[in-house]
Image (cartoon, rainbow, N blue to C red; front, side, top):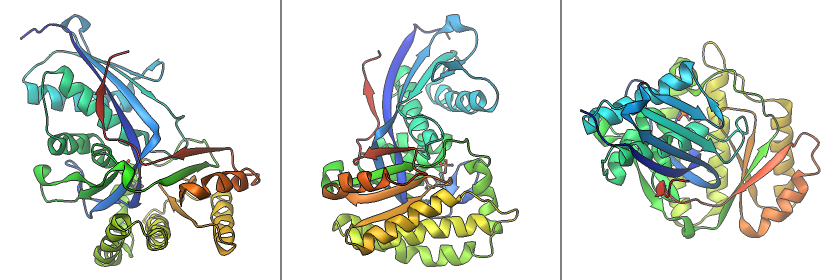
Length: 329
Ligand code: PMV
C-alpha cells in the first residue's frame, strides 16, 4: 500500500542509571534481570526526524552528518521494521538523528536515540502510542531507552514479557534540583558494546549475589529520590557503580572499562566530600565519571574538576523532560 510522504521529529534526553541494567533475561526482547532507576539528562539529547516516503526505494539512515551502513544501520532498520509492522505499512524511511553531545563522552547515545526514533517513527507512521507502549517499543531498540520516555526520574520495571517491561515516572523533573556533571576523561570509542556486556554479565560469580541484594538497594534508591535524600542516594550510587564494574571485571572474559583517570576523579570526589562538598560518583560501561550533587554545589565542583589534568570536558545536566514531538526543522 502506498501512502503520502509522512514526517515527524522527536527529541529525547539520554539518562544516567542510579540502579544499573546489566544483563538480559531475554536478549531478543531485552527483558532485564532486574529493575533499574535513572534520571533524564537535560543537556544530552537526540533529535530524530523520520520521513516515510515510497519514492526512497530503501531505508536511509543518517547519524550526525553521515549516512551510515553496517551494524548501526541494521539496528535502526530493525526498529523501523517493528514500527512498520505495527502500522501495517511497507514504506521505506529516511532517518536523520543528531546528538547534542559528542559520541564517546560516556553519555548513552543509544538511550536518547531509540527513544526519539520510537516516537518520531510511530508519529510519522500515523500511530499514537501511550507512554507505556512507547517505553516498551523503545526498549526493543536499546534497553536503557525505555527509561528516557517518561520525564524526570524513571523506574524501569523489569517485567516478564514485552508488555510488562517498561519505565514509569518515579518523580517529575522539578521534584529535585539535582545535577549530573559528566566528567569526560576519555573520548575513545568503547571497545566492548553494552550488548556484549549484558550477555557476559551472568558469567561473573558475583552476578547472582548482586541479584539477590538488589531489591534492598532498589527500595533505598526509590525512597532516597522520593525524599530527596542525597546522602542515602549517593552511598547507594557509589556501591552500585562499583558493583557494575566488579561484575564486568569478573565476567569471563573480563571487561575492563576503568582507567587511571577514572580512579583519579573518584579519589578526588571522595577527598572533596571529606572536606564538606557533597557530591557522589556513578559510572556507566566506560571510563568517564558522572558526579551527582545538588545545584548549590555544582559550580564549586566544576571549578575543582577543572584543576584535574585528566579532565577533558564537563557537561552539566539537570533532570530532563520526557520524549516529545517537536516541529520538524
Ligand atoms: O541500554 P544499553 O544496552 O546501552 O545498556 C545500558 C547499560 C548501562 O548504561 C551500563 C547501565 C544502564 O542501566 O544504563
